[in-house]
Length: 191
Image (cartoon, rainbow, N blue to C red; front, side):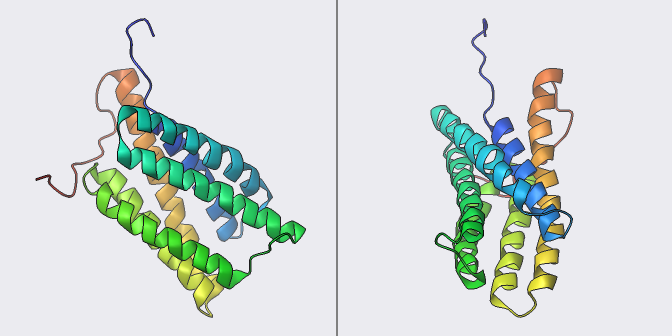
C-alpha cells in the first residue's frame, strides 16, 4: 500500500454473492442438501458481503453499499430460517418463506433499475436475479413448486456465474492493467 492504492470491495462482495447463490441453486436443482448453504450463507454470502458493503460505503458507492449489505443480510436471514426450521425455533413454512422472498423481489426490482447505470453485465446479473426471485415466488405461491424451483435454480446458476464474471473483470483489469473481460456499456444514460 505504499502507493496509497486501495482494493475494490466489490470483488469480495461479488465473490460471496456468486458463490453462495451458486451453492443454493445446486440445492434448488436437487444436487446437494441445505447443510453447506447454511455455513456459506452465514460466512461467505452473509458476513463477507456485509464487510464489502461497509467498505463500499467508505468509497461513496451507495449502489454497492446497499446491494452488498442487503444481500449479505439476506443470506444470514436465510441461513437462520433453515436453522430455525431444523430446530423448530420460529419455523417458517412455504407461504412464510414466500412472503420473505417477495420482499426481496421488490428490493431487487429497485436495484435492477439502478443496475442499468452500472455496466451491461451487472445489469444482466440483476435481471437474472430478479427473474430468479420471481420464479421462487411462483414456487412458494403456486401448486407447481418443484417446476418453478428448478427453473429458478437454472436461472440463478447463470446469475451467480455472471456475478463472478463481473468480479473477474475487476480483478483482471487490476492485475493486467487493461480490460481483459469486457462488461458492456450501461443500459441507461445519465441526465
